[in-house]
Structures are given as C-alpha cells and as structure tokens.
Length: 328
Image (tube, rainbow, N blue to C red; front, top):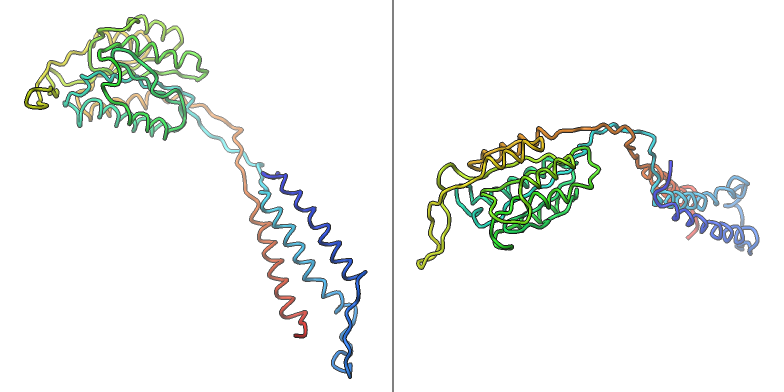
C-alpha cells in the first residue's frame, strides 16, 4: 500500500497539540464544581467507569480526524497486475489538399469524405500514435505523431484546400511523412497516402521518397480517390459557381509502384463506401499486437478509512446524546 499524496500525512501532527490541550484541561486545569443542597440524585453516579466514559467522545473525534487525513492522502494498492495488449504502431496520414479534391464524385466532396473517414479510422485505433501531413504544391505537417485523439481530430477538421500553393507534389508529401516516422522506435511504421491526381511538382520524386521510406522500414499504403472517367467539379463562371465534368486522372501505376516497393498495397476508391472499406481493410492489416504483463491495476483504499471516520463521528453523536447526557 502507498499514498498518492504522502505529504498530507503531516497533518496528523496537528493531533498532538489537540491531545495535549485536552489532557491539560482534564488533568492539570481547574476541576469543575457544583454546589447543591442535596446529593441524593448523584449518589453512586461518580464511579471510575462513569468518569472514564466522558472521555470517549473526544477519543472518537480524534480517531475520526486521524482517518479523515488518511483518506484524503489517497491510500492505494497495486498488488494486482493485468495483462494487456498494445498496438505498437505509428501511422502518418498523408492527404492531398489540391483544389481537385473539391470534385463532387464523393459526398460532400473528395476532401470532405477523406476527412470524415480518416476521423473514423483514427477513432478505431486508440493505442497508436498518429500524425497528419497535407500536401498540394508543397507539403507540411498538420499534426505530429501523438496519441491525443481530440487534437488530431480537431486539426483534421481544419484541413481545407487553398491553404498552400496548388499542385500535386506526391513526392514531397511522402518525404515529409517519412521524416515524421524515420526516428520512431515503433514496432511498425506506416504511411497512408491519399491523392486524386498525377505528380506534377515538388523537389522530391515520388519513387525517391518511396526508396527512402523502404530504407527506414516504413510501409506505404496508397489510395487513389476519384470516380472512373469524369467527375463533377465546381468551376467559377460569370454566372457564379457551376458544376462541370472534368476527366479524372490518377497515376495508378506510380501509386502501385510506391506501395509495392515498400511492402504496402495500392487501393482505388471511387466513392465514400469504397474509401471506408479501404480504411477498414488497412485497419485489419495493421494489427501488430504485443502483450504487456506488468501493467499495474491500482485499487483505491480511501473508502475504508472514510467509513471508519464516519463511524467514529456517529458514535460520538450517540455517546453525547444517549450515554453522557449533560444538564442544561
């Protein structure tokens, strides 16, 4: 057994002057006296037991204070141990945020669907560290590796197009993701790269970034998002925003090479349902569990001390009301 707040136990020292003051009043101070015309009602009432009983309320109150202090110091026990499983996986979600992600072949659009399903994926993996990288004409880290699900989800909700130069720098996005994972000690390191276009800018070629990922033992799953053929895309016209069908161009061969070269897998998502299925499949594939046997299970013991204190206070009240009755 140990105390969570052991410094509070010093409060027990306050009982020393309280007890000393009581003893001085009872033994060294003036004794109370009462003059009466006849002592018949008190005859036989002043025996040793009767005199000793009047100290019981003070003793009970002292016990109550002592156990209240013990309770607030939070006694705990960690004698039990629980066997638990942990994932041991670090994952970076690398997401394309170019303007083509506004196409409406997904609901509400590609970027909206990608964000919603990524949030579901994150919520389903509470034991992993997850980070987020976004890219268009350049790339940056939206959220570093963390287990803080609330922070990740809030940062994903803030992702939108137009925040950085337009374009599709797949190599830059993958290279930034690799940089977030290369120093990780996790048992498994994964990048899930989602894009809807063809690499057309950036300082790092996608295949070079894939080679670097392979060097660091990072597995890359690639997802091409977009309907087959054409997709409705919002275009600004003199009459406002109108939908126009534009050709969907995804470099599937490149995405497949990146995935195969790093031990991952390429997927094609043509609608929300298919994208959700892809994330579910990746979720099942990345289940590298490890057992931990030394996880302590703490038992809170403060309740027993609090109950003893409560019982002592109740007994004090009973003694004062029914056992040691004073004259008004």
